[in-house]
Length: 568
Image 1 (cartoon, rainbow, N blue to C red):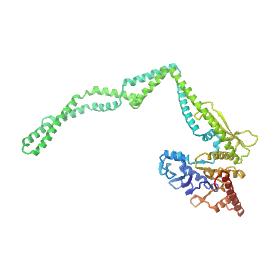
Image 2 (cartoon, rainbow, N blue to C red; image 1 turned 60 degrees about the horizontal axis):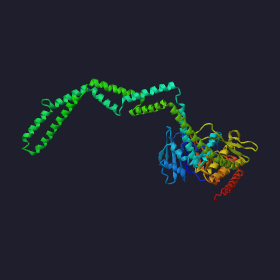
Image 3 (cartoon, rainbow, N blue to C red; image 1 turned 135 degrees about the horizontal axis):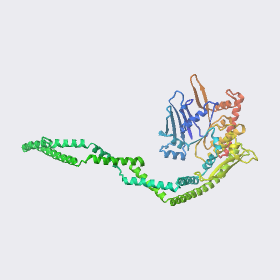
Image 4 (tube, rainbow, N blue to C red; image 1 turned 180 degrees about the horizontal axis):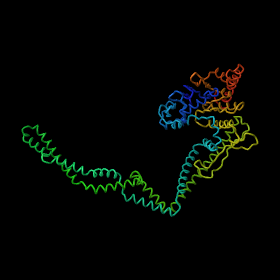
């Protein structure tokens, strides 16, 4: 569950630290007080795209930090995959947004990216925003909702279908891209043969270009090198050169070597130097003798380098790339020279891939329809609990005309809100307030099955009042018995059900405006309920009504717990 929210420098919030309870947490406050600002800060930490304009005026950054405790198995697996230590059964996700637009995301102290944060928080928290019910007008979302109910067998089928459809599409695209004009194929065959021949005749070798460039450098400077080597040889063996001087030194020491045995070491070293000078001299003489005629060889090297450059320009930036291009041409040439056989093979592969995809799509469709039958009954029951007394809810399936990565099914939710009316599309029947309740019904069904610990509802009470509002409050309370629920509301029926009640207030000062979030004690809850019922300064009778609503809520919670076999 989300045990703590820490916010700093976000919009009008200077700093807020909110400790949340495990059941139903309610946030209330005047319209415009900043309740949705707090939700925006939560979304910041969750990795949502956020403008730097949310940074509080005069500050360098905005910070949102969420602490989750009691981590479920799926969230733990997601954390483990990212290498995050959760040995203390806690995940702390923070995001700091800078004025330069950059952001820093940390999960348990480890720097991550926003995508990593989303991969974990998707298993920790689900947010129902003010406009989420509009997604129900998109029938593609209906199939997604059904698929969320499917088990492991169906998930495996979906993966198979996606892979088979990808193979099918690839083969189909290849067939569609084939050139059926024999004259054009003949021209392409000629081009491929010419390119293959050009590459193979070149007989390129790895490292050849670098070796040739080094040789060219020598050839281009052959005269300078020859002159330098000749001069060096002269210094070694001309009259009074190094060799003559060493010989004289050796003779001089040789005359006195027997007189002082310490001199023998010097004599040995000079003899060794003289021998090495002779070796170096012979090596330089050999090198000079082997120097090629620079003009002819230089032309050969330049021509070879020009050939390599042309091939690289045409076929690839490295020798490996050029030969890979050649191999690709050979494959293409083989296909075109045996065109009829190749097309026949592709068509057989396409048929086989399509058959596998259709077969698995049929199996998935069967599972979807079985699941939809159960889901239909569960959503119908949940809708009745939300004061849709005469509702008829149905799920219609139609078959796609073409193969698809999602299988063969299209699904649509249909509803009738009045007796005698045939179920029709949601967007043709339901108002915004009704859509909110329909989405809540769907959420409540999934809440029984899913491991996500925290559900946030942002003003789900839009467009409802009276008995319907009480039914919504009861449903939220029932969900909160199994999941942590955080609800932003304007309705006293919902607020009265709170296990923890937070009040969001906005205060104006001479040069700034601040939003604060405070947890209310029982007296504060009654005053806030009085404000919702009767305005800023509620009368004694309004406060008495608030107390009655609060007492009635306590009794209703007891009944809800008994109905759900929850220990009180």
